[in-house]
Length: 298
Ligand code: GRG
Image (cartoon, rainbow, N blue to C red):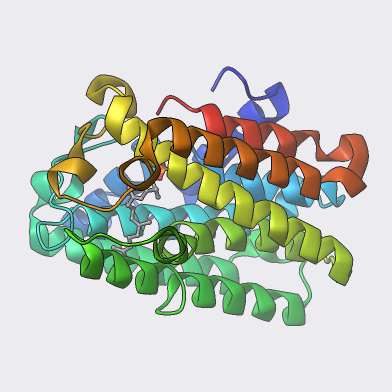
């Protein structure tokens, strides 16, 4: 993460503190469930989605306090999706963020419930926490709708369903892109949109430019993930290298070759940065995050 600015590092520390406070305490019954929820959320992670919320919101002049709830909600949804994605019925992974996956530590039943409870918690955070107290009710409602749509059957979960259906199949680039724009991209787009909403931005041209940016970095992020599955190291990426190949999943390197995947990634990163051209120096945080998504090593 050395390529990120000190402001983004500060936001990364900030979201850890916010999440720490929002999650139920381990000593509060049902203790096992709460331990599993905290394990899933507080066990590291790059915090890319909260950083997108903070960078977008700050660019549009929102205060950090107004952004905490959205940043926490997207990260909590992301953590739930990883817990469920790692289950034996899905990708059956035993390593995540450099540690045993949630179901390995707590058992499948508790891991499923932890994911369920995290999903509910994300919406509770957006709906009622005092962290979002400064926001107009209509904005808050739009945030809840944005997140619900992004993580439901027309967003992330829909993408996961498509992913299950294409294992072992040869698919074309459009189909791969459609799947990832839902599975990985929808939540990343929601993060950027939530940052803009928290800044009470209603300017259609600003929202459209940000959505183009978010679409591009979501896809670039996924391509980098696919490349790391081929050439990353398990100890660095914190999950098993080669897991996609072992499951015979269609990936960008499988479809385009490694150099083709790298070229596609570079084009998307350029498109993402171009989408920010109207924002001037204020967009530095988002620019840095676009480059980070493209070159990250884990
Ligand atoms: C099971 C409901 C359900 C959804 C799963 C997004 C997703 C949908 C599963 C994750 C599978 C996966 C590894 C996708 C590749 C891109 C991705 C989301 C990687 C993990 O995100 P990072 O790298 O993780 O931001 P950290 O640990 O840094 O937070």
